[in-house]
Structures are given as C-alpha cells and as structure tokens.
Length: 213
Image (cartoon, rainbow, N blue to C red; front, side):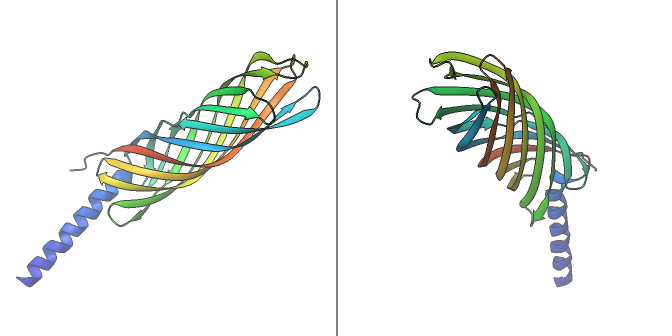
C-alpha cells in the first residue's frame, strides 16, 4: 500500500510539472502585453546651428505582443510598442509631448523555477513613426512646431513570471531601452533625438497550447 501511494504521488507530480510546462512547450501561442513607466534624460541634436540640448523626460509605454513557441521554452513573435512621453528643456518653461508607434520582432526564452515560476531573458527591435509637438527656439522666438519622423527602438531585459493557472501568467520585467528618433525638419535644423533608459514593466500574458490528449 505504501508503494502504491508513493507511485501515485510521483505520477501526480509528473502530471503537474508536465501541465505547468505546457505553457511554454512547442506549438503554444503567447498573447499579451506589458505596461511601463520610465524617467531620465534625452539629448536632442540640431544640424544648424550645431547644438545639442539636454532634456528631462518621463514616459509611459504599452507593448502588446503575440508570439509562437518554435521549440520548447523559446518563443518568437511580434511586438508593437506604443509610447507617450513628455519632457522639458533645462532652463525653459515649456512642455513638449511625444508619441511613437512601432512594430518589430521579439524573442524570449523561459527557464522554469518549479511548477509556477519562470525567468526569461527577452530582446526586441522595432521600427516605426513618431510625432513630437513642441517649440522652436532657434529663431530667437518661442514658436509652436510639430516634428514628424521615424523611430528605432531596441529593448533587452530579464523578467519573472508567475503562472496563476495553465493559461495565465503575471510577469514583471526589468529592461533597458535604446531609442533613436530621426527627423527631417530642415527649417528648424532638427536632426535626431536619443533616448536611453532603464525601466520596470508589469504585464499579463495568455498562453494557448495544444491539447495533446
């Protein structure tokens, strides 16, 4: 009888582990997104005259994503970051707003820690569009101006996920973002803006895996 209980316990444990790992098995889909807030500084470079301004900025971003597990624990997919940022130039009492939307590839790999926890490194690169509504100071007057251009967003980080059940995971992620926005406003001489920052995001992911029974 003791051997029977032991065998049943081992079988139950194997089934539980197998079920928990099904989230990240080959053929599963991953749907979800994350929300983050960051604060830091940005450097804006002008072609003419040749100057650079340092600005304090705060930003909020949402990163919807969809991925597919090509092998066990490794997912590749698409992320579509959306960011809204506001910042002020040092020494100037004016506020500038920034909006960007981009799309690109995403990759992450899961390392399971028991039945309900896993850590994952993640990297993504996206390219898209940006609109900045601010002011021009180059002519000696403060004039409202809108800048349109392109954005490139490189992200890399490490996350921790807790599986509430076989289909839902809640995660936190510490990441580094490197962004460059390129403009073509020759009338005000604006060339590009670089934004580099560390931030922490929280997210919710839905895991859809095939029923193998």
